Amino acid sequence: MNSKTYLYLLAFILLLPMSVSAQRKGPSAENLAKAKSLKQKYEDASVAVLASKYDIEFGFDNKTDKVTVSRKKSEKIMCIGSTAKLSHYDSYDDTSEILYKEVQYENGKKIKLQFSDDYMNVDGFFYSDSRVVYVPVNYPFQGSVRKIYFDKKYNDAKYFTLLYFHDKYPTENKTINIKVPNWLDVELKEINFDGYDIIKEKTTNGGFTNYTYTLKNIESMDKERNAPGPSYNYPHLMVLVKSHNKNGKTVELFNSTKDLYKWYKELVNGMENDPELIIPKVKEITKGKTNDLDKIKSVYYWVQDKVRYIAFEDGIAGFQPDNCQNVFKNKYGDCKGMANLTKFMLKEAGYDARLTWLGTKRIAYNYDEHPSLSTDNHMICTVIHDNKKYYLDPTEKYNTFGQYAERIQGQQVLIEDGDNFILDRIPSMKSQDNVEKSIVKLKIDEEELIGNAKLTYNGESRSHLLYNINHTETDQLDDALEHYISRKDKNFELRNLEHSDIENRDQTFELTYDYTLENAVSSFGDEIYVDLDYYKEYGQFIFEEREQDYLFRNKIKIVLETELEIPVGYKISELPEGMNEKHKDFSFKVEYKDLGSKILYYKEISIDNAIVKNSDFTKWNDCVKKLGEIYQNQLVLQKK
Image: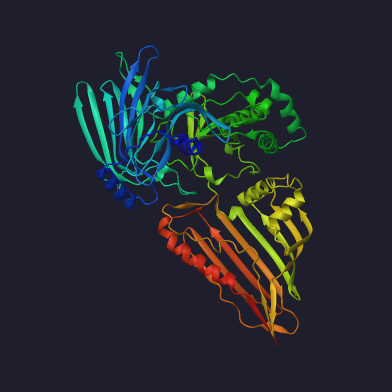
């Protein structure tokens, strides 16, 4: 299954209806013992795959002159819980077809069940032109077994790209058989095999080369959130169909990046863009601007603001952008359509704008080594001006010109250049570029804190703030900002809120306000206890029983400077303990300073590479626990 549709398939299948297939006879003693043994091994699973087999064979369609792929999948699945109800499925689109499907009892007898065939969608939201064939199957008791068969044909081998050993269920034995004819040049790129006992056999017979890969005792594919994409960690085969010599001449397919680009370019050349409709709008939004970069920004920001992003680009056949006039007229599009509209609007404004393909950080591949349709999943627009490249991703709402979202930073890009192409990399940003800084001045009024604050947001901290306040329950900006600042805390009374221009992406976004916070001060005898940190970021962000690295949405830098006026007649009892922990991927610093009539509380949290690796969870947890203890330790003021 192609990785681009895998997550959508999982989401889709969770919504499928379930039904019951009758089989009254209970399990054999052998099956029951097997199921109990597997349940001890895979405690969280309701079923386990006893045997999964893929038989893959390449063919040739003389009518279309295309290499085809036959993929036969058979699975023997056992219920290891008390009962299970599952939907088994396979997907196809206009480049493939399902030829055979069947469900059997363990003895091979066919179960008469109704297969459904629907567009793949989640909550009615259309993602791609892919369709899914599925059948609901009941496993009535522990030890019950079903055999599932799906035969699929790819009418063009370029769409057959990835074969994973892991699946959503634990598997005792997985076998992949691949039969390659001698007239076809195919590379089976083995990725992430280290650490796995994968047995490979290669034989030749009658004009074919047969490859067999076997892996046993496979855990289910982890469903942890904020984890690297499966291409980083899980063993799999990338199928690179390079060329064929079927009819006496060599035909290059995807032998190199040049071949991949050539196919992409053919799709682009086959479009029917008509920029006539967009010309008046380009003139309107660039009118009065004399600076080239200001004109480029105006187009970029207009597409960001006015065109709604619809995420259906992950369909395997969805590689051709929509025509610019369609996206402009409809005011919605996927990443390809939005990039294409941006390109043509900028060209009408007189600039060198080009379509650009890339894989986001979810994908581990690059164009140099992996000329495959699985190497990229995104499209943006590149503007070349004064010998400098500017990368424009209009799907990133509120993103600033010249700054890039974490998901594309450092990624290799394939830029159109006529019959040639340009390979480059998007610049990476630093955590300092996303700094979120708060300067707070406080004084004590009986059991309340009276304060004024100045908050500044840069980079992705700014774009995420604007995204959040524009997706609150209220349409009023000030109300949205108030909810964001106070976290809807009834003890937090906000006054005199002012903010910078929300429409100006090119400046730091600034908030200033006064506030009163109740229940942040308490008195006992001659002592006053004060809580100086309202938000307490990451104070409970502990990793427990997590297997995979944790990815943050972006690099993070949080800075808080709080000054508290010491009430007349009081002194600091004792400066609380701070911390200063540094790691190559993150750091935590907290300190208190006695300024005489004031005390300074300073906090700085940096997550410099937007990741905490599994190997560093212990270090991270130790830091967070220490930070949590600091949050709990209030400042103590004592009467002189």
